[in-house]
Image 1 (cartoon, one colour):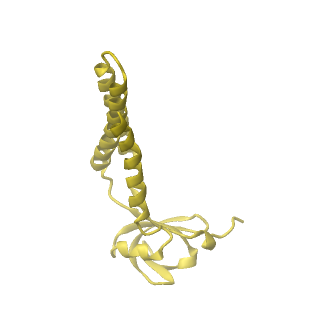
Image 2 (tube, rainbow, N blue to C red):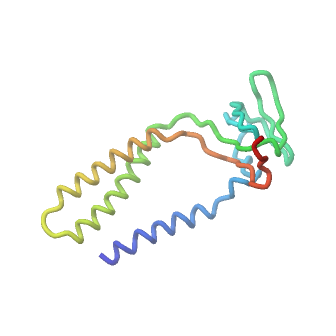
Image 3 (spheres, rainbow, N blue to C red):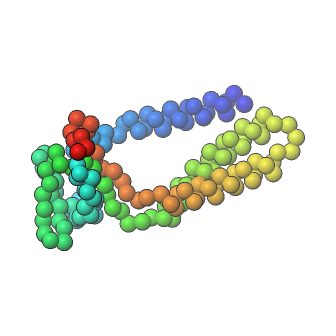
Length: 159
């Protein structure tokens, strides 16, 4: 019981540490992840969303291609940049199944270890429900990945 109870906080701490190791979203350098021709969404400071193809970027601007030709937007006018990946529903569903099953399996294991009497049926149903809910959530998740978000100091007040 004590070992199981210690695993949950240790797992959460590991996930938190991994997220801290990533480059912050406010870093303009994150745009190096993009390749020419990638489908992206650029959201400007007026929260207008533009779906375009990435061309390149410099320290001052981002260059992209629209249906009307190549366009440039100054860095201070960019609020967010997101990738527009092809939907990978099967991949997202599988991740949801693993997360849902893992969470409910852990909780079910803790419940089974502390309970008395036959709880195997309850645990199996609990894990099955978690897998199903995880699969639904995974399939419903959007497939946009945020690459850049303007730092707070650059955000303009709403008019």
